[in-house]
Length: 283
Image (cartoon, rainbow, N blue to C red):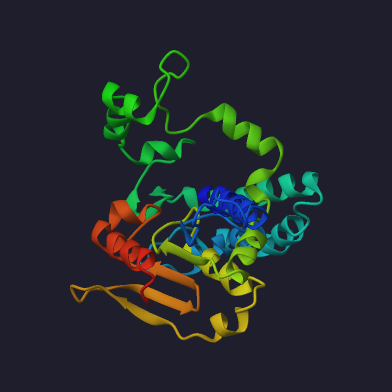
């Protein structure tokens, strides 16, 4: 999700500082970044919400014919508003609201988990209720874990999955709809490796949109990346776990049988993917 924003920005900051401080000892050995089911270029990704309604790998019906027709009619307006980001913040914010209302929200009425359409979930306005992650809270709030993480309990309360005040502050600046693809392009052009992966059952940051922005990205290796063949991602155990496109230092991987959180849904596949990336092995 928001890793599509803060991973490129944080990595770009480190990359810039490394460039500025090339001749001194302070250097962070940044070799690559990985983003899973992220939102990086909303103007491309949000219009692709509709693709999951037209066709998804699980043949799950998310809207009826009338709803789909309305969604198709809304796509051009969605694109025109989001393409004004980030220069026109008003249009940017309006575009996000419009695209969510017209292209995303209709699919929520199907009663599926927006992070994994294979699962049922009553969408009553709180998507976080679609998963029981109480074990995460229990772990992160354990005194020994807080101490190990350096959490100051005098200032910091219990861990929260989502903080509405912080989220609303981001919304006021239309930040979710702002593009961060150029940061990725700069990194690629300087040889930093980039892995974009997406579970094929996620609706929120679906694989269609993630594939689309990687193909549209303006970087030195664009032609080679776009011409690269799609190949099966076969694990060491012989499982056909996804579809991969890779060229030089840029890789896009669609992961089968997984929602928004690939490591949770396909832990063995995610681990193998991560090991390949860290070892700079071919996918």
